[in-house]
Every structure is written in C-alpha cells, then in structure tokens.
Image (tube, rainbow, N blue to C red):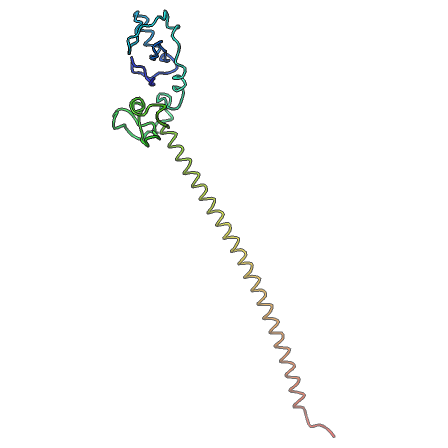
Length: 208
C-alpha cells in the first residue's frame, strides 16, 4: 500500500483519513469508505471485488500502514512550520512538490510523489531532508569543535614551551651574570697579587 488513498488521492493520516483494509487486501481512507457505505457501494475501487462488511466498523484499520504514517517519512508530518526552509528545491518530475527527502539508495533528493512512483518505502532507504541537513550540520560542527580543540591544545603546548624557554633564558642570564661577577672578582684578585709581587721585586736596596 502507498501512503495516499487511491480514491481521493489524499495522504492517509490519523484522523478522518485513517487507512481501512478491505478483504481483497486493498486499502482506502476512512472518509472514502464512509462515503462508499453511504452510497451502498460494497465493491473495491481497484479490483471491483465485493465485500460483505455490513458497517464501516467491520473493516479493520491497516495498522502497519499507520505505523508508517507516524514515521518521519510521511510528508504531512514532516512538513511543519519548523520545517520551513528545509527543502532542496522543487522536484523536476513533480514540479509543484518540494524535495523533502533523500533517497540514500539512489543518492537522490526526492519529493513525496517520488516515494509513491520510483522510491517506495521498503525498497529504498529514505531520510528526510531536514534530518539529513541537521546531521550534516552536526557532523560539520563536531569536526569544527575537534579542530578548535586541537588548535587550543597546540597553542597551550606552545605557550608552555615558550614559558620554559623564557625561564631557561632568565636562568641562563642570571648564571652568566654570576660567572661574569666571579671572573671580574678573580681578575681583581690576580691584579692585586701581581701588584704586590711587583712591589716586592722592585723594592729599595737591601741593607748588609
């Protein structure tokens, strides 16, 4: 079964157009079946097989189809006010329909009519364009967050190395200053020793 009634061509929903099953296996919406019962028509609209249901309540709902209706692939449920702008444009095959879905099987953006024609549920892996867009957005954000985290870690590491180098430079500068002072002190000591030795060597004549 498709996701629209073969009589009125409206999409099934969870109110007046809930899907009703006929014994022959075909499914039509509740509103159309009520009209058929009111007109005394007990033939299937497609295969013309008669049924013996006396009231509309004797026909079961298509619960499997209702589950699909509740899924994100139902365009009536997908296209809400929050979804405005979440379209990939107009369908080239069905010009009045927006491309609200991505067929992952064929890698194509499609509309609701395309699902009924060439990309049926069960045959194709479908995803709403909004979901696909938000997924790509989330993935991109995660990639950006990872890149930012890597950059921040690198910057922190570089700052640490610069700090270490700066401390090393300061320590080296202090050590050089200390050694220079020690050298100067030693030079003064040596200079004084030389002067004393000169005085001893050049003193007045020795007395006999």
